[in-house]
Image (cartoon, rainbow, N blue to C red):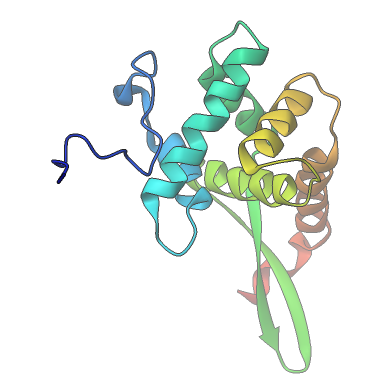
Length: 161
């Protein structure tokens, strides 16, 4: 018996209708792009919506609000770039846009989530988001403070641009 394409099971997770695709802003797309491995956007999309359903099962609040609040609280306002002059490397601070700061915060969040020891990436990311939302996890704020502290110490070298 040959099955038509409509009868075949989909390999990927389709999001439930409660998640409106219009709500996928640039920030959500940045998180999905960071989640995807080797260019597979469908895999990143699947992991993102599994994380949102994990959050929805744990808390009664919209999971996108939790994601936005966590990313907004940990996003940096400056970044550092390395410039080599002579035999010395200088880390020079520069201001970044809102979109870049949210992208950096999402990368830090996913890097921290991947180091956790839990079952799957949606569980790791969801539990990390909940911990950061409840202000129990301080690793991301330490990372942001470290970048800001380094930028503050190295602002005297700005003339070397």
